[in-house]
Image 1: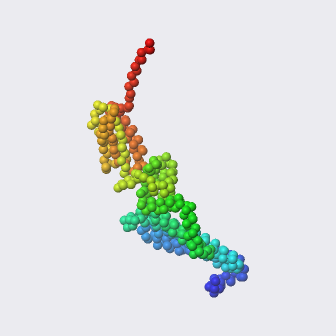
Image 2: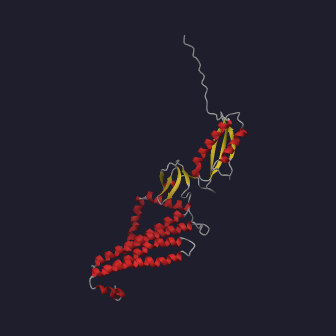
Image 3: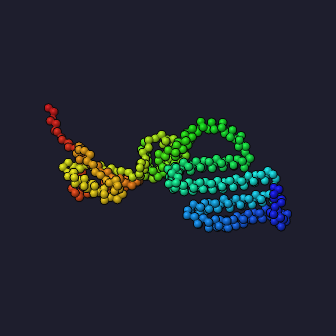
Length: 359
């Protein structure tokens, strides 16, 4: 603290007498004023500079930077105020560690928010950084969170005087025991990293598991993957399970388009060419059926009581499948009724035979 004894600050504090409480109060008020002035002047100048740029990333960074800078200036003032109180060494050390912990927490939150902001911006620059896109974003985001959390724990231990070296040595032994005890959790953790690296699906994709669940991927976490079904029910699947499961990704492939199929049967004797025309007309006039690739109708075979046909059309995204099939079935049924085309249904003839009475 020798620098404080020879600083201008000591000369300023001497104006308020020898009362330590008064001096501490002055420093607290001065730190609040300094934080306000810094926020008003410094950030205003930076905002003027940021407005000249073409991107809004710097504006968002400045908004995130407000709180940690303000809190840091106040914490410095509180630390200087504790020096005036002449507390016993043990209390002074404890207060200093608490102030460091608060400052560390504030800057950790800042680092997490900045990391999320930067990665989100980089994921939209696919032409310059093809390795960071919406598919790999969760991998980089979760890796950054782990690194920041590890660094935070390390500096937190240092601020409280914990011997990190000895802790790491004991952590190796403890880690083996924890590994056996939490093998399922670790399996989910490693599976989560492999899923994020291999990216068989991404957030927003519609997938179907081999167990039958179908839903939209809403979150890919380190421990589990969350699906939202069409019934608005969330299904949480451990990553170790989904990593070893057969997955149908309806949103995968060269595009997100998906083909829907409508199977229909008409009675024998129907004008097959007219039936095909009606089906094609329904497909091309219905909303959400893509023009490219164009819809098509195929005559699939001769059924037991019907001529079997199939109408196939492409939709823009899997979420539309249910509503499009509903519209197709409804419109085909109406058109067949207007055209007098019969849709057969299973029938069974029952013949009653009278049994002669017994003699």
